[in-house]
Image (cartoon, rainbow, N blue to C red; front, top):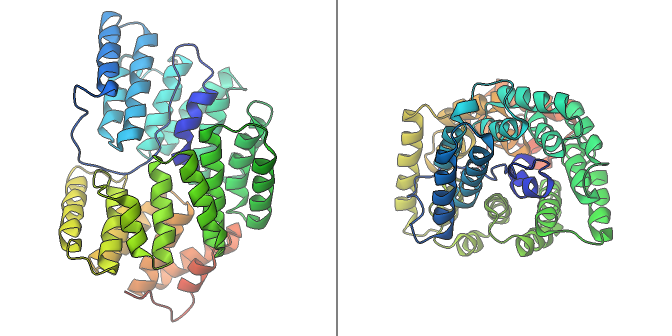
Length: 389
């Protein structure tokens, strides 16, 4: 959740004069063409590429170009743009003493590729230089949360309180409290902060409302839909938000609403996965073609050695390919890298469907150690439980 939504906030918090670092919003894989030449984004990239080529040893135009590529990755849902961003920073990519704006973008790209330890190392370098660097604190809190290092992440969120508008620090902290046994407090504190804020920009409101929706979703609170809709009002193009709302609708057995929400969205694998799930649930004839498209994409991803999308691949194997053992293998590999609620859920689902006691024990231990309140997941790992098809 945190990792995804930092994209918009990076512009608001960037503390450098060289560029506005922008953190990608979605880790979804996609096979898609580049923007057409008539698209303003393409024209901007062309201008920035020319400026960087004229000054190959100057980090400022390189950072501006890389930041634009990362923005494009978020908007288009296309991870290739992150590769172009890395290429723009090639002159400084291996340099531990690279300028701070380069390190911010490098950490952004690394965390998007799930190279979390390397991302943390760069963020540590930034914060050693500039202890009050808000973007680095927020990004490090994100990566630490994904890795399940909650106490360290919360400390970074608390340091943000003096540096950013209250809604951002409150959302950062609530994201951690909500998965460490304090979901009710996190929800109420964040709701009051949002209600009491005098001015909240679209990015901050979308982030807070999405988190409120996800907390409500895990708790089985129907208020989730109100928050999802409020978040969509604030940012109707947020890819992560659309996926999260789709998951809630799927849990409510509202497959037709998912299809309406996603429309003809086929660029982004994470959303195409939700569309396939909804099409199959509603008995649509087009489900078979959508499933085959997904299968080809995941096979291509594995052939490239790409391990970024194991969570989505695990969901595909379990729910659409009817292969719980393959799903469990992917979910276990994914769990080694990231430990967000959605990672826990697919591990629980796959473990239950495969009848794997060790996987169930892993989930039960995490529930006990963190105190995360997720009744649906807890029920999945009860003895004798299996996941219905």
